[in-house]
Image 1 (cartoon, helix red, strand yellow):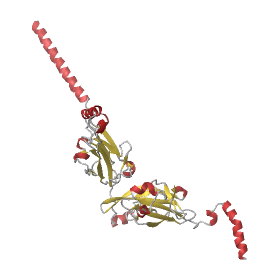
Image 2 (cartoon, rainbow, N blue to C red):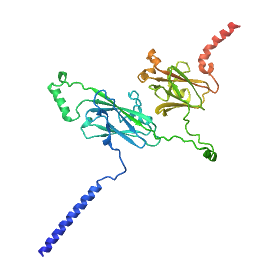
Image 3 (cartoon, rainbow, N blue to C red):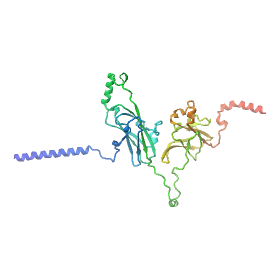
Length: 377
């Protein structure tokens, strides 16, 4: 009887152990999320300041056609600020980051996210991931700037600085010496995934009719503004494709504005819709000799009644803010800009005096005209 009772106790204990093991195994497998495919490994993120020193040129990353995302860090040991910030969703298209623009405009569908690493507060090093859609991806160079400061990352380092400040040590008058800010540029080369249009063979053309004509004309002439004054014509049948020379930016900066040239001055910034029923499309990229360049397309929806004239300016980035104001432009700055004058033929030709002057001004000119006619008789 006692043996039977001992056997029951052993059996019950073994069953309890098996149940506990099963529960632990189920809990372990339940706690693991289901795998939904490969994810971006932020552990492979390149660090911008791996090469210490104020002359660090930065790092260059390449997003290949078979990749969806690329990751980078500004630093592991310093305090860093990213420019433009990830919250702004802006990016630089020039290495100097003079004129940030919308990331979605520069590379449609792209998005920059940040992941905080283990650390303390605002001094936590961040891992940034740029994700770009794989379909119809344009070839583009994107730039971010890391602003680095040589202040210890760990809290104990900052506590030592605070102690020096409280005790009068460190810098002059108890204030720590100013830390040098270093710029480190991240360059991301986005490789194109756009497929080139392959013309159909002659046999296919004969059997299936004429080839498609809705493909963009890759041989269209793009007007480049690279001298003091460039002239171009615009019509409803032929949009104007143009670009600024390398290193220059377009003004006005808003694609809905333009300079009025009906007075021959090209200084008054107005809305494009006030002169023409036309649209300036956001910049597109074109690959020439292995290098991607941006160009604009001005499309006229309806021809105006009378001839119209408008202007754009291509200026250096540092002159961009002042180029829109004639009072602030100097002779040196004007030599560094290119003026693009666009002419549009109206359906009824040039505007007459009656079209240009208001009725009241014409009434005031009546006596003058009468005197001139009387004196000639």
